[in-house]
Image (cartoon, rainbow, N blue to C red; front, side, top):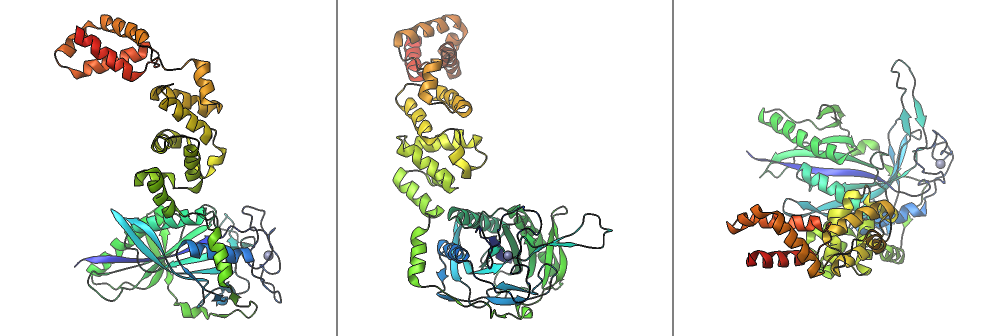
Length: 478
Ligand SMILES: [Zn+2]
């Protein structure tokens, strides 16, 4: 019997507001413990939370960018559970009236594309953080409240994902979108993006889903992919042995590359959700939503389409150049400074990106788009050849100087003077009688060797096209 994998993801992304969701404490990462805490985010009795408007705006932007419908009426609920880093003994979240509903994200799948539907995006506060001493013999732990009340959106997909690869693609695309629209930095090392995986297997023609297993707190895309692949094999093997897959929560062991059982899973009604009486329902009008919509940056898919249409680029080029908003802007600026789009694309992909650590920081890159455009135009106008352009570019990467200045200073202008090239060709022919003999025997490689010698003699500055013409003419005469 053939089995398929059914996967749904719950992704928590931290919104990059300056202050927390229900108080004015800073959300700055890495501050000394408990320096960003107040009675509200410490959960002291009698305090009143107030919703941060920026949080609401960013959540709506995330919804608009993922084709969700935005709820004009949503509300906050208390999700009750006890944990030492949650002193209120409830987390403020959204239960039955989330801010965004039913969206979708298009991801690469095999050779084509697939829409992964989103069930919802809701707002919630993050819990504080337990800090355990490294020395296990110490019988105490600390709580750091800096994280408590940090704004999160939880993005819940429908069970539309069917492999580890698809999950990986989905997470990459989600991260790309959230960064494009500037609502989250999605920094996994700092915990700004965390993911829970729901996974079950079922016979391909079955109507009912198998028991699902939840893998919690995944903090890398690669781990998500590997955990899904491991879990598929584990569940398949159990099924083949006739064992029942229990509904449970598992964790990922990144060293052993396997999942292990943490606890049997509670259903959501165990949380005893109820409307938070301290927070008024959130009512947003159409005008407010429209205003946010018009402020939304161009999204990656739209940019890819536009690059293909306006600049006649292949889909591969358009995708690479649109991978971050900043790189796309760099490319467009280069073109607007006069560079040929395809040549600019080739140069950025093959020469420039090799020297870029973070394409979101193109603004501080030493070679400015204006200079790159100038360099490409020097090649177009036959002032320098492609090979010399690489030398000039290497200089630009070091000095940040203008390409024209480098060419003049170093005397790199291309030699197109036929009489000068003829002299070199004749000298090279005279010095390589064996190659001439080889050419006459039909060995094509020998001609390439001679071109190389001529280029070398000219210190790379000869116009390669003219070299070829003259060389062919001279050989024909022999
Ligand atoms: Zn606070």
